[in-house]
Structure formats: C-alpha cells, structure tokens
Length: 171
Image (cartoon, rainbow, N blue to C red; front, side):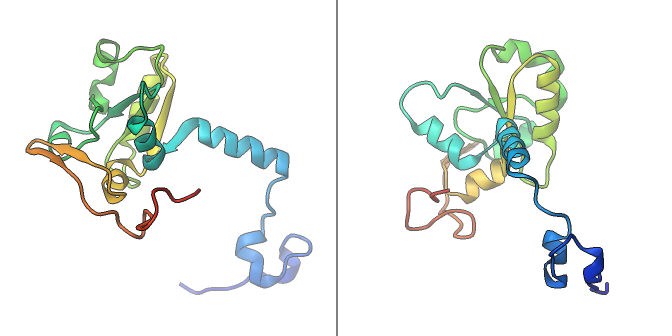
C-alpha cells in the first residue's frame, strides 16, 4: 500500500500536507462537538466506571447484563451481572430486568458487537441502555475481579489498559 499525501490545495484552508490525514476534514465546531460527545456518553460507559459504580456503597442505579453464551459466562463474567444471551433478549428480558432501571450491556470485547446487538434488542423493548466499552476483555485486563464456573478470580492489571501505580487513570 503506498502512502501519498494530498496536494496542499486539496486540503482544508490553512492545513499543511503533513496534517492532511488529521485535519483534511476540519474538526467540528465546538457546539457540534459537545453535542456529539455528550451523545456518545449517553450510549457508552467503560469498565472502570462500571467497576467504580458497583464498588460504591448502595445501588449503582443500573443492571449489568452479560449478553454472551453460557460457555462464555462460565469462562468468566462480572460479579453481579445478569446473564442473558443476545438471542434470548426478546423472550426473557422482561422476566429478568426492570424497565425502570437502565441496563449496561457487555460482551467479549471491542471486537464483538454482541453488547450492541443486545442493547438494540433491549431498546426496542423499551429499556434505556448503554454498552460497556471493552467488554469482559477490558474488565479482566484492568484487573477487576470476575467469576468463573470454578469461582472468583482476578489478574494483575495490564499496564497498557490500566494504571499500575494509581487507583484510577484520571481521565
């Protein structure tokens, strides 16, 4: 694959050829960016924020749903999560979840759309839903405890995904 730069005349005004891939399409206006990022946060959360909410005293204010298969659930899942495979959401959601309580879905990880498919199915049934970015993979990689068919486990945090010497990333 060859790497070529667009001629400076083809880029946005005032953008040099070196910045073409980044600024060839100019950033959105601040008001549009704020609306986009606020909307993004309305649809997604992350493993660290879910872990903090679950660890805090009291009700976290949401139900956590693992949308993977029984085999995946047995391999490892977030403590306290509800197990409801995506394909079973339409027939079983109302037996397991309260529509008054927001739901956070997760699946394997960033390469899996299971949480998104489960969130779509739940939203079509009238639930308020977010997905947990990174899924179970990032839950485990960040060092949070998980349950398996054999019992509770945890692993050291991966230094590429979580701070090693701090309680939180600060973001």
